[in-house]
Amino acid sequence: MRRAPAAARAIVAVAAIALLVAGGCRSAGSHAAPPVLRWGGDAEGGAPFVEADPADPSRVRGFDVEIAGMIAHGLGRQPQFVQVAWSSIEASVERGDFDVGMSGVEDRPELRERHAVSIPYYEFHEVLAVRPADSAHFRRLADLRGDRVGTLGATGAYRILTDEGARDGVIPISYDDDVHPYADLVAGRLDAVLLDDIIAQRSLRRTGGFVIQPTPVATGHYVAVFARADSALRDSANAILRARMADGSLRQTFEAWHVWTDAEGRYFAGVVSRPERSAAAPGTAPTSVGAYLPGLLRAALITLVLSCLAMALAVAAGLALAAGRVYGGPIVARACAVYVEVVRGTPVLLQLFVLYYGLSSVVRLPAFAAAVLGLGLNYAAYESEIYRGALLAVARAQLEAARTLGLSELQIFRLVRGPQALRLALAPMTNDFVALLKDSSLVSVITVVELTKQTAIYATNVGSWVVPGALCGIVYLAFSLPLARVAGYLERRWRIA
Image (cartoon, rainbow, N blue to C red; front, side):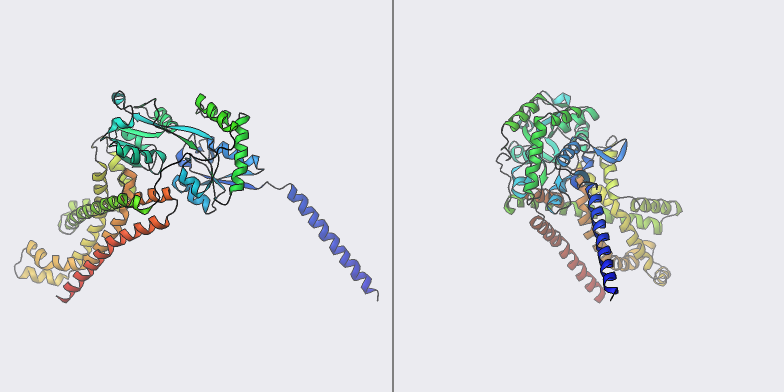
């Protein structure tokens, strides 16, 4: 009977230990690190927005970095940076990759329709940059009728060029970064560049060679973007931003990054005095498929023509390389082998950059011509290996028999070796053409707006990849499936013959 009290004492002791442990955990938890605010940005955008710190590349700096820190600390959290491509910030915040996106995100009506958006925290101006010799007669967008104007794709500036600029006869040229537009302007490939004044001033300090027109084309604002369901977090961030505007913290940040102006001060005063301001000005951004269909069809035609021309070049150059390796002497065969290995061993993107930008001081190729050359010469290396393998696959006995009959090497190639090699090469040639058709999407890096690039602009504007992606996929299938059927028909016919 004495064991019952002993068991009771043991239970009490265990309970006491559990309470102590729980209390200790709560005490330790009170000193644990605060929760984090994950914010997304693109360090490739560079200063003064977000850039890798030269002193410590594992860290980022910029005024968006500091503003994200203000919001995080105002919420009692620690900021945590998440790298994301600038064009993917809005989609990533909606799928929960981070809590807020900030990296020069532009305020626009369709953005507010799809996401929770903060009050604008910086006012910028879209400005024209031109070469000094053109500054007197390229003062406004309307002065650039029939001229090439570069900008970043899927931005407010791009929309201005494709809307107002199209009415004025301006030719918009889309880029994937904000460095090459100004480089092409100085090199003479463009007549002007339309981008944010912050970006224009940064490029002027970096490279020079152009002037910025003082009269802005349009005014825009930078905002923080939250998921549509995170309106409460957005409202808290708005209160913090207004407070930082009122106490001068935001001004100090912008002054430190040399982007503060008197106009910015007047804008801040208006926001603080009207805290209800949060909506963007009405816009006319199209969202229907019909509005984008003409652009998609033009881009699809560019993709098809580009792919056919590049494949024709690849076949011709590939045949020459294969012939050089099979029929040429040791020097010719070695030179062809070196070309094949170098081209196959380096990325096609690198080759496109070298052709378009690297050789611009020697020969200034148009973007479309550089795209055809880049893809064609790249695929020529792969085609040559297909043809070489097909030529070597023809039985040696057949070749010897043809020589015994007195046929020349040209006749042997035309009557015996060539037809059999073509049958063997047809299927891999078809595969290569389909692959080249898809790889044509890479040429957008040298300003060719093909199907995938136009689809990306469409998807960014409407805030979804579902319809644009489906349309793009249908077009690619419409291009590739008939080719596969023709190749299959030829294979069956030649096999029967």
